[in-house]
Image (cartoon, rainbow, N blue to C red; front, side, top):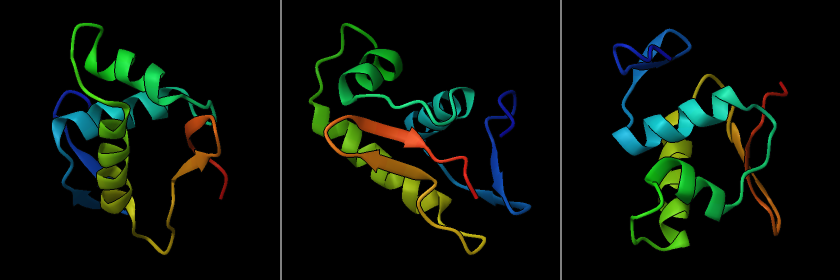
Amino acid sequence: MDIRAQRVTLCGQPIKVRPLEFRLLQHFLEHPEQVFSRAELLSTIWGQNVHVTSRTVDLHIGRLRKALNGCGRRNYIRTVHSRGYSLDAQE
């Protein structure tokens, strides 16, 4: 992830992510293995004064997962039942 250039590569290939997915990925990379609830992600990524539903998080997580599927590995972002989402740093 190149924060200055706002670019993401996977296995040496550029992948396209939207600005919100970029911010989600950056947040997950800064806190690998930490579980974040939808409410925490909404507050951190979208901010306090934005009126979106928690299902919006699911939509953007789905887009990010789709963008990250590659290199023979799937599901870099795991769902933790009844808790939220986490970056799975395990191989």
